Length: 463
Image (cartoon, rainbow, N blue to C red; front, side, top):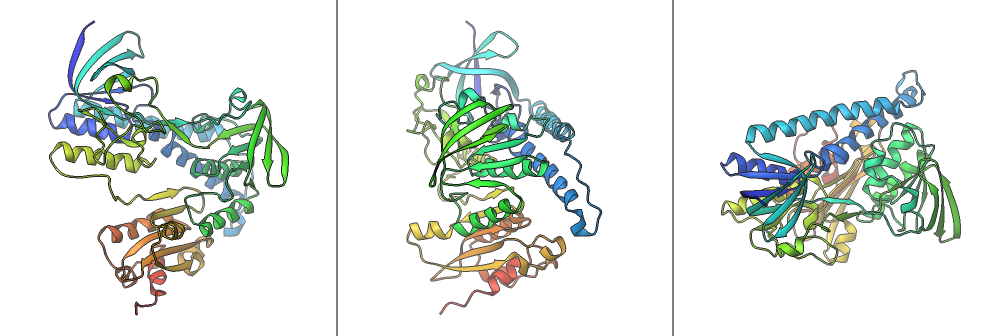
């Protein structure tokens, strides 16, 4: 067995790992990236970007069906999912090509295969095109990602349900899509496929969709889903599944009103994700896991094994591509002798339903649980005149302010361009600016950002 020595090996080509690899290569170091399947990671292939691509196609379908609202003749042809898929594929192919160009221009070696530890800092790689390689590295970076988890419900796995990966490959419209889970993935796809023409039922275990959001945000989104004739069964437990997804399925469901059956054509499982940390030999490398199976790291993303770091979701970081990118920056700076940690960072989030939901910092419920007193200001989206021009005035924006000062502690919004408006508040929070800075700013009229002026103008001055 020939052992190849390498300065740096990154396992997984997802967001944080690939940027770290390119950075180290451009700094003159030797880097090999081992990737099983998705060049560039899941985000450009099967998660963030392709899902938002299809969500936008679904919005176009929705607007075409409601064109009379805007004085245009409506059309209601069935959505052409083959064309939707082709549009998405063109985008994905372009993103893959861009990633490959970065590997080439940075002189980073991309190894397509599956890695497994066979010794401390030593990896055996089963190559996709046949053969094996053994790499021994000075430093190893685990960028393993996560995968959709299938709950242990009798008959569910046998029904061959869809996950986000399979759903994004469908070139047909499910007659009746049953969505297990009322979180980000489930809600985005539920609305999109309803707009494509599917009947949709959401089964959610909790009493509130989006359990990490405040009840008023979740309630406002629920109103939208119900208006679009999406059935939502909350406080439900799936007891048993029969049939085959893609043909016919029947679910026995327990609710507060008793047991009932839900029949449909397809099942989407969107109940959470599990880390890709098994069967890779991490114990051989001395890398410990948490009870939940994530790689145990400190606030500089170092594992329990010297010379090995973890990046992104497998390290238990919030499951967002932008956080994986920030993990890269934490590792990059510490390798350069700059003190940077993951502790206390602001984590923005955006749910790409229509209207979208964004959130940064504290929620009201989070503040209550932590015993933090706050002042709350809230503005209906109908008060933002830009929404009148779009005929999209549903929702509101809300900010939390400290009681003894004027700092912004949190911001939430359900409304058009919620993510872009949140980014403005996020910058103010990062800079430690008082809310009065946004209150007194001059934003272009008519824009969504202009609503921040009116939101913060409602705040009563501190006494």
